[in-house]
Image (cartoon, one colour):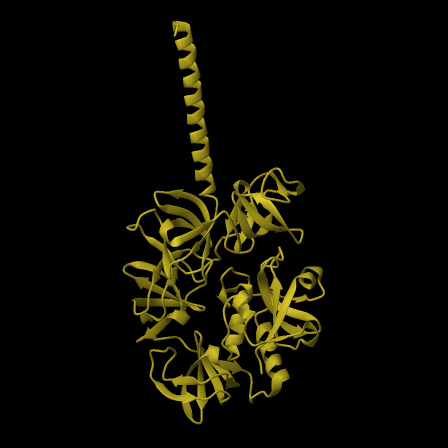
Length: 449
């Protein structure tokens, strides 16, 4: 072989090697990109969301099996994820990744000046509209680097590069803390994975997650929340998950008001489960309310004074309601008490509700234990036809894309229902005849027998 031929041969080999290397880099980069855009589902019984990609970093939250998180990146066996206003890291070992997922991720705020809204998750799809900076849209899914959103009552897609997702409706800024009432003592956590937040609402950031038996110092109270201190860190814990012991709680005096127990309940010596039960009252027992401390009412029963948690009292009711219609109307009346309460994704209290959290809370207030999510609520009670709806029935709707269950509310009569609306940003009344709800009606369930 001549020198010229050897030169040409070496040149061809160099070109082939360069092309092979380029393909390897490009394919590798494409695979890394696909593996870091999408969503993941927790497969462990509970999984920590950490501040950094290692097991020694701080725990931001603990998420139960089945929780769906947005995946925004990956590094050394960890996914970088977003969940309800928090960015953190979760171990890949306990997550099932998918480039596509349908879930209510919250509210997306457009960050680009003018952004195209497309019919599918790539620039090859047609444009169905344009949105400007600051526009908010419900994010109902993810497909690679694109968010699935509800736009003009239909499903559309926006590049995730131009959208900032927040946990609530209309932004993620937390409300200002309300002035605290005085309460001091020791509190004991009564549930698992209970969150301590930086302020008295679920809109505030999570400072830590604690399990049953953890003791905290109660320094005050703000609405439905205790101000606490734990190992030098101050924060707030929802009163329902903190048993107050040895505290001097403030009691607001009330005019004598009739009330009815909605389930079997303890009449306690003080306003927390840490106090001794004086006796157990059966569902439907009439009592007189004359004071309130946090979520507890001070009541009189046959000459005995004690405290009952508000979840088990129907205040203003003097006698046991009877029949389906009366019980249903009682549910409707309770639901209407929360008209105007703001929408909070994941909320299950008057501090803020999401749709199924609102239904769950109202039914619990009326003495009925039902499941928490809209999908699970579709299995409670018995199914009823749309034409046979009665006040108090649970109504289930498809999501915006009509691909799965995505919303629930309570029927109030006259072809109307009450619900916590992410679009409306609050608890409100809507009509079943409205196009959006009429076309997305899924089923109705009757819990009241």
